[in-house]
Every structure is written in structure tokens, then in C-alpha cells.
Amino acid sequence: MSELVLDAVTVSRGAGPVISDVSLRVAGGEVLALVGPNGAGKTSLIESVSGVTPHSAGTIILDGDPIDKLSRVARARRGIVHIEQGRAVFPSLTVRENISLTARTPSEFDAVLAQFPELEKRIDAPTALLSGGEQQMVVLARAFAAKPRILLIDEMSLGLAPVVFLRLMPIVQSIAESGVGVLLVEQFTQLALGLAEEAVVVAGGRVSFQGTAKALQADPELLHRAYLGG
Image: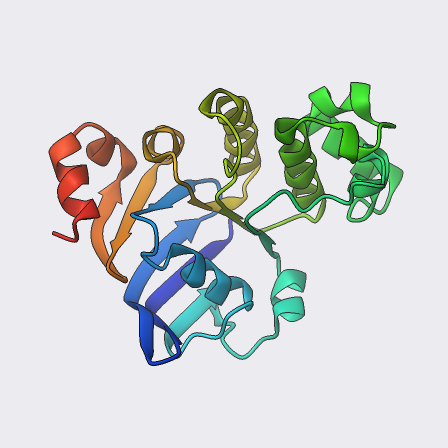
């Protein structure tokens, strides 16, 4: 199983840090929910993991090896796959063509369809004609086809109704059960906590809670204090 470790990571932009001294661990086969108020630095943190944004201090470790000096492309080749905010489909391409960008062989393509059976009936439709939820499913399918070791998902629910996000949750869980470590940034906090084993709350650029998702979900007062940075 793969393992991603962040050790005292700080990300700075402009005059100072947007997120400071964050340490966390994501193991293969589990979902870790990274939640917190808007502007807390969650996106900056996962962008530092994939190499979109450089971090100014700390160490990012994949399977025991520091990857701080690797480019974004090199990190992707090592198995860090980043689904950024928004549904980044190619609307003029069909579902088949979108998935084929990362599923290079017929066997890889068949494995993706086995994981995403709902897409089979729309396989030759232009993705522009799909609903928002279906487009997000295509994005997940393309990421799964890239054979991630660690999957970073930033606001999968953006622009979607909670009921649509609920349809996507079992897919994320299934990806994790295949051995992938999932770091999930999500605005629907309670839904994310219901999906995850572990949770980290970031408020004011720092970790305000780290523990089991179940404990945080079961204690609204604890969650409220964590969101306030307490």
C-alpha cells in the first residue's frame, strides 16, 4: 500500500504563509477528509502535494521518499493524481475519448468501465451533453484510469446538489478500496466525514483538529470549535 506523508508543510503566497506547519498521513486504501472554512488554505495545501504550488517549508514524502524537488509531471508519474476544482472534461470529446486519454489499452478501458458502469450507456455521447454529475464521474473515471497511488480530490461537489454528490461517494469509496489513498477536500463537511476514515480540519491556515472522521461527525460542538480554529 502507498503512503503520503506531509511533515510540517508550509505554503506561502505574497506577503506570508497561507497554510503553516501542517502534518498529516494518507495511507493506501483509506479516505482522509480535509475540511475547514473557505479560505483556510485547503486548496493551497493539496496543490503543494501535486506540485502546482511550491511549498516554502516542510517535507512531502511518498512511500518513504521525499518528492519536494520533483516537478508536477514527475509526481504524476509517481502516482499522485490531482482532480482540481471544476469539471475538467473535454466537452467536444465523447466519454470514450475522454477516458481513453489515460486508459491506454483495451484492458485498462474495460477496467474503468467495470468501476464506472453508469458511464457505459453514455460512452459515445459528447461530454458536453452530460449532466454535471455525469461529467464529474467522467473526471473520476479518467483519474482512476491513470492508476493513482494517491488521489487528490478538490471540491468534487462544486456546482452539484448534495443528492448528486451522494451518487459519487460510493465511487470514491470503491477507488479507495482498490488500494488508492484518497485526500478529499470537500465543502459538504458532513458528507465528507461520512465517507472518510480520518479527518483533518484546517482553520486560519493551521490544523485545528486531527483524528477520526467518526468522532468529528458525532460531535457538532467539536466540529464548530475546530472550524473556529479552537
